[in-house]
Every structure is written in C-alpha cells, then in structure tokens.
Image (cartoon, rainbow, N blue to C red; front, side):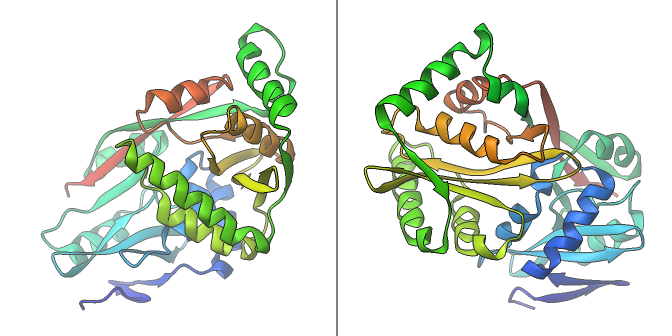
Length: 305
C-alpha cells in the first residue's frame, strides 16, 4: 500500500477517514469524557485531516471513539494517535494492533492530557512534556475590570476608537479574501524566520467553515477590507475553544480586539481554551493579556510495548 487509504482494517478494528457527518459523533465522544485538550475540538480534527500528507481516521470502540493520523513513512502506511482515545481508561488491544501494523516504526500519541499520562504510563507508554494550553474565564475577560486587565482595555479601546473595525459573521463569500489574508500572514511569518505550521488546516477550515455546524466565525473589516478572521466553539460542557485567529499584524490592537469579539459570541461557554504559545515570547505575552485562570499541561507519547 503506497497511497493513503480512506479505509483501513487493523486487527479487529475498522478505520475510516473522517468526514463532516462524523462531527456530531465526535462531539458526543469528546463531551462523554470531558476532554480538556484543545486538539479535541472536532472542527480542528476534521480540518487537520485535509492534507495530501496525512488523513485523520476514526474507529468506533465499545465505549467511545479513537482518532488516528495516517501518514506514509519510508513508503509504508503508518498510524499514530492524534489524541488519546475518547474512552474511560486505556485501550491496550487497539494500541497493540496499531503497533503491530506499524512494525518497526514507532507508535506515537501527538497530544496527551494528564489523565492519559496517569493511566497509560503503566501500559507501555512513555511521555515527554509538550506545552501548556491557556484557559481564560470568559466573564472576567469580557468585564476587563481591575488593574490586571489595564493593558487589554487600553489596546482594545484604542483599536475600537482609532481603527473602528466592523465585526460581522463569516460568510461563504469571505473565503477567498480570508485565504488571501492567510497567505499574506504566512509570508510575513516566513520572512521573519518564524513559520507557524498551521497553514494547511487553517485554509481547510476556511474552505469548510459553512459545512461545520456550531462553529462561530467572524471577520473584522477595516476600510472595506477584511483584516482579521476568527473561529471558535464549544468543546465539552461549558468549555469553549479558540480555534483560529489570524489578523493583519500591521493593524495595532486588532488581534486583541477580535479575540474579545469572538469571546462575546461564545455565550454557551464559561471557560475558553486558547491552545499553547509554541514557545514564542510574543505570543505568550499576547495570551497573558487575557489573564488565564488555568493551564492545561500536555504531553507527547511514545509506545514502548
């Protein structure tokens, strides 16, 4: 098998490529285990698989769902867990079938959370630190009260006063202009020798946005031109996810302003997971303006058998 497959049988497990109609099943599974991982947000899982270099595969388990990434390594198909299987406890049988499928190549877990590390490390897994994800309390950010929010108030109020962005819902007619903005944003990052490797799934999410139920999308228009876009939604319970935000870095304060505007629209959420900072000091400073109330630590896993 040289090409990526839409269906794979691994031992007793049938895997199929994720499709938009799987999102409701995936959302139910995420809610069932109350996963706090940013990467468990179903629209991200869908968009992450829209690449010529990989496919995201799903397989149903007796009490949940497993999400795997299919790639080619050394000209053979290979499977890794994207996130831990959405079940209570560990899934030893599936892991061993995947390891057998992979042969001599290592089986990995790209994102793992604390409950997984606590349970799975005694089942042949070895974990190393990845990063921490920022969690905000929506009500606190929107009120922006007190001295600790002084800088955020200053930046967002100045943006509103001087730039006067128009914030409106994302529509299918915005796709081309948002992709243009994404391309310019990527070019600037590469010119600064600071590439961010989210281009492919961001573009896929833009192109599929109107087919993803429940995802909230907005754009910021300045002088008739789209200068920012952002998407997010609910993950589990009353926890939400900031999925995507790209803004023209030459428009001062726009990124902060748009983040607040998206948060206003996530009114089913008390807490918002804003992913990590990629060890970038500028991004860390930006996210700390929103005064996180918690951090979700994440790990990477390797199966040692």
